[in-house]
Amino acid sequence: MTKLWGSRFNESANELLERFNASIEFDKNLWEEDIQGSIEHAKMLYAIGLLEVAELDSILAGLQEISKEIREGTFRFTLENEDIHTAIESALSKKIGQVGKKLHTARSRNDQVALDLMLYCRKKSKILQKILSTLMQTLLNIAKEHTQTLMPGMTHLQHAQPISFGYHLVAWCVGFKRDIQRLHASLLINSECPLGSAAMAGTPYKNERENLAQSLGFESASINAMDSVAQRDFALDLLYNIAMIMLHVSRLAEELIIWSSYEFGFVQFSDNFATGSSIMPQKKNPDVAELLRGKCGRAYGNLISLLTTMKSLPFAYNKDMQEDKEAVFDSVQTACICLEILNESLKTLSINKEKMRKMCEVGHLVATDLADFLVQEYHIPFREAHHITGVCVRYAEKGGLDLSKIDVQDLESILLQELGQDIIIDKDKLASALNLEHSMQRRNSLGGCSSDEVKRQIHTLEQWLQDNL
Image 1 (cartoon, rainbow, N blue to C red):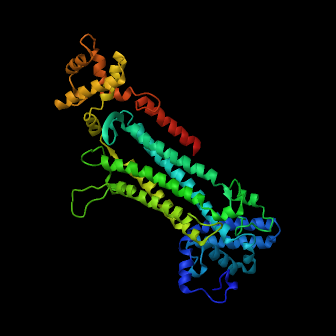
Image 2: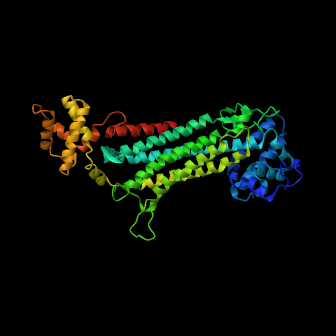
Image 3: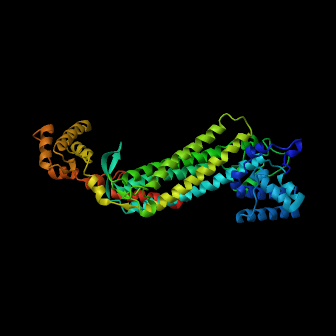
């Protein structure tokens, strides 16, 4: 087969070069975007008088026929075609003759591939936003059922303060909200169409780039032709956004793994989303969550790979940039399936309220509440209240008790020793300060964990989803 660029060469390419140089095995994923760009480009060529109406109709019909063949799986991709652009253009010329060769007027494979990959990234960004919004709604639906379900909130993976399970799920949601916002922001940033930039210096044709940009769904045409074909910021933005999504997924997955252990027992995966052991028949492994956690590294690797490829490349287009696509395709596919299976597995997750409540009685979760009680009742500095509470915790641990279970009379004696025998201690208020439910409910500041505040947060996030997606 004669290459589209082969007339300058006396000898044919080495078979090894054919295999090394070709990208058709992976960039065929861009066939839909390539045909979309070609259709709009052909319409533009007609608008500026470079195609007759019959020629335009022939090109459009040929492209639609190729699209149908690819969709139905009858189109034959071959190594000789080198890349998706050549494959489609060659097939078009075979179908409609010389007219097909007019399609490449006023463009280059350099601006074609930039357009195709940018269209792909924009399309997948929108899909990821929808999947993330579905996941957020699933989490919010579960959270609504657990605004009063006590669980130990942790810092350093140590028991800290009592919160609700619903509050914890809302925290996950807020991270995914930022992921959606990042994807949306990237769409706004990467909204300049590169088509019509040609190889790197523009064209001598009046190719109506602004109209072309609008027809392809962009805000405007790119400002500088050289930058248009030389940059892959849009792909790196998507890879970074996916890396952040997977970071959040991995942290969520880690907590599900911990919570599903016998030591915690907070949650249990359904049989539909768990696996067993080949040797230990009793095992029920959280493999879904472990794979979610592990695939985060894959997304990071794809980001670093393209960052490294683009580092120090001179302007404009370089063949190195052919390495941009596989990283993007892999990260998109990985993120989509991870978010989808996470969403489905959460829907069937069993939640053990009793175990969560019982674990709140370990680790002195009401210690801060006791310190706050001392500050509010006796107007002492918080640091002094912190010290006195530490004394109380030490007393409780000596007796093998949690602070929430300590006898109020015993606690009163300690406080009298620390604060002075002349103070009056309101035992009802002191008992309330040691109550786990009271501790959770009294944190009703904006962003806090009280049931009413969590309900407000859920409503805010649901309203945001409704308004923005």
